[in-house]
Image 1 (cartoon, one colour):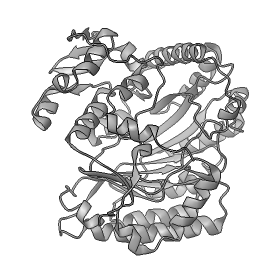
Image 2 (cartoon, one colour; image 1 turned 90 degrees about the horizontal axis):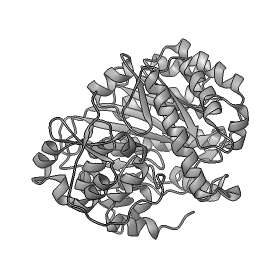
Image 3 (tube, rainbow, N blue to C red; image 1 turned 135 degrees about the vertical axis):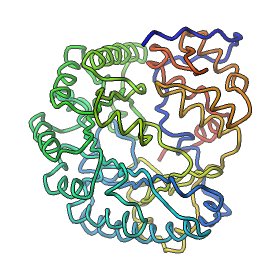
Length: 462
């Protein structure tokens, strides 16, 4: 495909990004912008005006066998069986209340996508995974045999009995967090694993023959070079995965790496950018296509077909998303809502315990939430499209909002053009250039509203 021609817009002088690595924008707004509601609306009212025939289901399993040094996810390590069993019991109660709310107006309810995330869903035993699938099918009404659905796993928990359950229930995509095939790099990232157990887990995943295998890798680890990164890239490629995700290393508050973080920001940015470009070029030469800063799909495989036909992408559908489990988010047109959220170990345990003890009646109301307005919906639309390789179609934006994105966000798009990050394409699309895609984690926050920035800045880390 020919390189896009940069777009020229009216110059402006907003604050330019100082680093390529501000924030991974996988959903907008970030959960740190949510606040505890005082009115606590009923879910039946929240969903009353929504389309219910193309819903997505997300189930958050907040358990892992270990917490990596870079992890700032909502998850608890080493939960005993009585906790996971009680969690699933509560999840079933929440699912029942949620399904009742969706059915309240009498329209047919249909799910077209699903995902189990966390945490590590395969921390659950094979029997517990069976129960989880039963809840999704028999309580929520999601036909897992028919719809595309994804599950996160890890080398330690990708056991044959667990994978057999997921394969039998029709899982479409298994994503395994490897991060590095180099043992020294794994230790530097505070991820105690050996390459041998990683390879054994990948062998089991290939034998289970899921339509899509994804391997996650991280770049920017202490001591990592192009040569050592290539070891991981080639090791991943040897398994012929349908997808490979390349994640830049972030060091966040309350994570294991934060306590010993003494990196020079400029030098670390240079290392990460250098490794990103190396990894991108290596995967493109190996027959993969890039669909966002992080996502690479092997051309001619199920990953490409399903993402084209079913809408699976890095950026989740953000109206019509139904979340279950503590930490899961739900998205409607006017309200994004979730449960309480934290990173610090004591707070995570407290919130999980509180979730398990939650009376069923409370699951019929939204708790922590962010109210969307037309301005926020415009920003969300731009972020969902612009950060994907296919770009932002201005005609689709105009049909939705009656304006052009450049008119609504002139300073932001002018900044992109001035930096050489913005290109025009066929069909009036606004695309990121190759260098723009490298800076996607800086471009996304440019479109955050003042309301979201203020809420995130006032969030108390815990």
